[in-house]
Length: 181
Image (cartoon, rainbow, N blue to C red; front, side, top):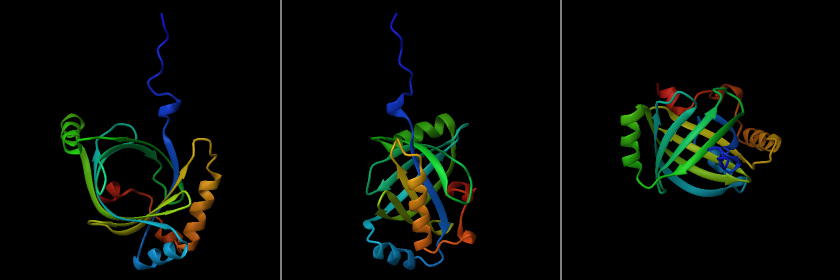
């Protein structure tokens, strides 16, 4: 009898990044800093994240313009400092149908609507977010290659935090959905 391969193997292992989220009291200022750092401007994206009821980790369906819908499963600590996030992203062809099926099967926890200005600096995704009902935020995500020990990603986030003048008082522990709840 042939041995079956495990459902989750190395190819499907979660991606990792180092994240930091902070309030943004002066939205034009971070954009100017990013431009001075020669971050690549990827423009503005309108996103709607539907968070689903799950017993382990977090699961959201992201619908965005421009872009395609995708399901994101992720795990991260709710801490106000740099933190590791583990995630999987699956593109889907019909976000509305998937959302309806998942809502019927497991339920919706909440919905977050935002406008995101995306910039790229080295391996860091810089999100300048305007979140409905919450305000403006800066989110840094240093994407790690599979073999990284995450030290480099921590350094990049620290460097950007310093350049953007993000003080401890501005750090945010909770994600947008948890803040809305």
